[in-house]
Amino acid sequence: MRKYAGLCLLLACALQAQDEIAHAQRLKSSLLGIDTHIDTIQRVLVGHLDLGQRLPDGQIDLPRLQEGGMHAPFFALWVPTYFKGAEAVRRTLDLRDAMQSVFDRYPDRIQLATSGADLERIVKSGKIAAVLTLEGGHQIADDLAVLRMYHRLGIRSMTLTHFRNNNWADSSTDKPRHNGLTDFGKEVVREMNRIGMMVDISHVSDKTFYDTLAVTTKPVIASHSSCRVLAEIPRNMTDDMLKALARNGGVVGINFGGGFLNPRDARATMANINQMAAQEPDLVGKPLDDYAANEYARQNWARPRPSAATIDDVVAHIDHVVKVAGIDHVGIGTDFDGIPDVPKGLEDVSKMPALVAALLKHGYSDQDIQKIMGGNFLRVMKQVIGK
Image 1 (cartoon, rainbow, N blue to C red):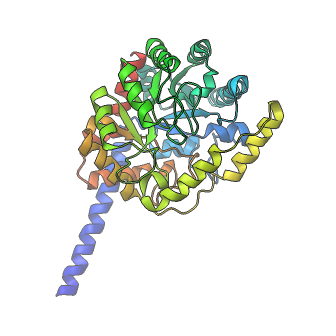
Image 2 (image 1 turned 135 degrees about the vertical axis):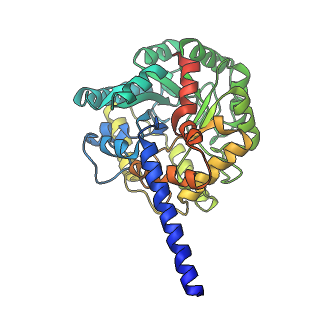
Image 3 (image 1 turned 120 degrees about the vertical axis):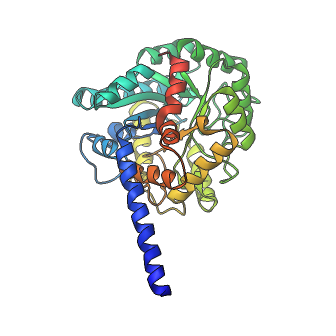
């Protein structure tokens, strides 16, 4: 009798799981599917890959974005911090050109979104809505005119730092140099508010974060961070930071890197960050590009290593943000194609319906999931950029 009861329980659990997956697939088509950080455009610039094809490795391409229901990715134009001054600007423009090549090749499948209304219109048309971001304030070469020109090129967000301090803001993974934001750094935040560019505080030091909130008049985002109480790395946010972000009206996008999710992966993640941050080649032009290409190949992000993290860890971080900051302040910022490991069950963007199913299993309503999977970030876009 016990054996029969056990089989019935297993069958009931299996049927419930199937119902959750079916519900997630139905819900997928109604979600905006905003992911506020992917590093995929590096693969186009360095590897000349065709994002229109389903690729055998990596985590992102156009077919898998559609399959996973992630209709509005933020493509990061990431420039390593060893590109200095004019070299950082040149590299940014090379990445913008690589992104344009995707738009030009697939105008029927992907389009640039420069506002919240743009994003909604493009997604409704069945295309991918691409939002462009900068990943590091060093890319403006300490010049607000360069920032404004990036905005004119359709870029709508910028992380204030990357792995290292720049000349006006401290990074979370470098020794403090400015005690947060300098006066010029505060000017950068004000100018981003004025022109309609989202201020991204992923990568910044805790003091830079609080300085930014003291200056900004608009909500900020943490495009690809998670919760420090669950995984102790400085790139993640403390509970006090999450509360402050909520008071500001901002949103944090949960990072899918193993070290951001699970403490067993955190040490390896920090070792990798420290190694990358230490690089300072004395090169310019093509030799510097070649160096960057070799380093990108060495990182081998297209084939991430096994991780201790799982889909349950992602849900745990979402749960924690909801508990501390509220349902209106959490979203998704996978860091796909820029992380050395991925959680089991979320190996690439095509698996995102499994996350929706897991959230349903944890009791989140369809309305809650709409917010997590894009609604919250869309609100910030409209508040910062305008409708």
